[in-house]
Length: 252
Image (cartoon, rainbow, N blue to C red):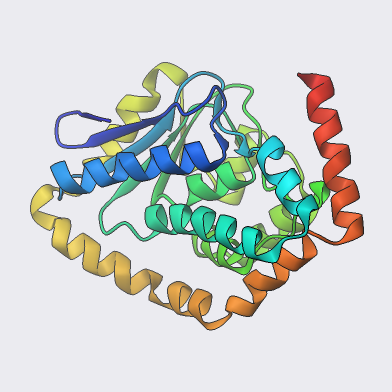
């Protein structure tokens, strides 16, 4: 975390491609704890390094959890995952994702949890690809993505699992702006500073009001999140997960 002329930059570097596992969630919370403690009113730019913003869930961590068929373990894991993404989504200040590269699954949900998304030109790919690897989209995440992209784009990305290039991601609303890689951070900081510090309280109140229907919908249907945790343990889901993990190990 670093301060930069009226904004705070949080750079994710928990592992080379920011796979989401307990270590990643702990690092994310630690960073935002520091932001809230040391910089209570400044906007936040969330970014990463290299060719990947976040690869999403760490298959080597989560697929064994799913295969153990232990609902208590899964509920505890999901509470940690869900809480991390909701924290960013509902942060009462301006948040900007500076998306440096590939952004998949939970990583894409984290990106669209930010108020503004700026992407870098290039070969990056974007996907909500949970379904093809045997993971249903939990209700909480569907509602978060729906808030950011609208229902048609959310349905298209969720139900197809399709890979999109930078232009496709911008068409769907994942990216608001696309700039040259060397301009990415400066542009994200420009977007972060668009609202001055003296307007921070007004911004927070407006954001809370905008998100209220989404947060209410999330709170109203916990059973749909529980259903997702049951479906990840279904025999066909476990087979799809095993195939995805084998393909990942083959690539590595």
